[in-house]
Amino acid sequence: MSIRFTSEWQRCRVVFASGARTTLGAELDALSLGRALIVRSPGRSQFADEIAGTLDQRLAGVCALAAPHVPAECVAAALAETDRARADAIVAVGGGSAVGLAKAIALNRSLPIIALPTTYAGSEMTSVYGMTEDGKKRTGRDARVAPRLVIYDPDLTMSLPAGVSAASGMNAIAHAVEAMYAGNVSPIATAAAAEAIASLSRSLPRIVATPLDPDARALAMRGAHLAGIALELATMGLHHKICHVLGGSFGLPHAETHAVLLPHVVAFNAPAAPDAMARIAAALGTSDAAQGLRDLNASLQLPASLATLGFTASDVARAAELVTAATYPNPRLASASDIRDLLTAAL
Ligand code: NAD
Image 1: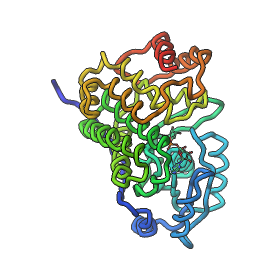
Image 2 (image 1 turned 45 degrees about the vertical axis):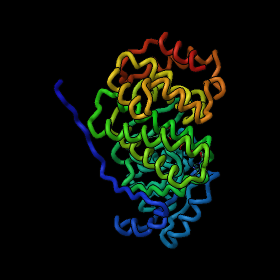
Image 3 (image 1 turned 90 degrees about the vertical axis):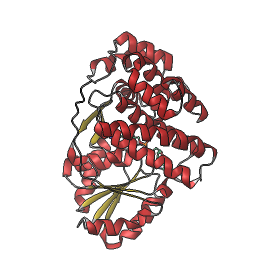
Image 4 (image 1 turned 180 degrees about the horizontal axis):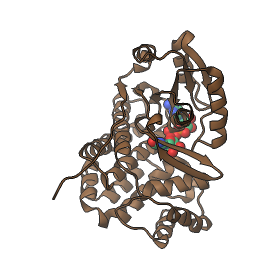
């Protein structure tokens, strides 16, 4: 077997420690960045306020406009706030929604992003951005949106409810799973993906049982970091494409949709990617990847069907049509009827 791969790296400083959020000012100094605009979701003021307080004179403002799937109207309003604030950097405090809005700002204003993640979405490690306009989610890659600095402070995830933690962690596992069978996978992506799946599949059940377990929180965040690296270094396939359609066009919740669909897509792809499936199963500590993911979902008490997330039988045909119209890499070719069957099974 000949080994061939290409990989490209974005320059990113990562600081990972309990309490690391207090280093933000010093880290900004080290990067010669002055005034920072904090970006967060509307309901999530707790940590953002604390972090804003540590910035003192360097706080350029707080933009609390982040929303799931980065709606275009939020981006327009956030750009107006950014222009008013005259910031040198965007500091995203929150989950994938806050990081996503920071990325949309960076894409339009070429400002560096500092991310302090509070979920396991993993967006902070990638140059992938997404935006939703007219009911369609558009994604792309651009070096300008890759955060320049990521401060991982597991204490920031302590308040993340058990159910949200579990779903967010399954979203991270989905990045790692699809990286395993990506056509452009590189050794570092495979290694990161295996470590991500192992860290998350062991920590998430502990978090659901004991949400304030600091070691489990740190292990899950380590897994999310590694899953984000895998996502950055590999191109995502059928699973992510379906999730984007269900989130962008049908308003389904992002992380839970990932959790419900993943075992179905893995079962569909299994015959075409036996080596990747063996690596996923090994990382899960099981013998069958799809069954291992199904069992993990059940142990995390996550929703087991798309119906519980608001998807209906009458949505299946249009969703399958939208997925089929998109281009994406995948180890197994999926026809419109395959996707309809898969969605119906997940329903
Ligand atoms: P999110 O940011 O919307 O957070 C989920 C929920 O958790 C929200 O209600 C939020 O207010 C709450 N929350 C966040 N942190 C909390 C905390 N510490 N305590 C209590 N509540 C908290 O969603 P998400 O799942 O983090 O991210 C999903 C979004 O990220 C999607 O839009 C997805 O497309 C995007 N994403 C992008 C990438 C990428 O590389 N571009 C990767 C993964 C996900």
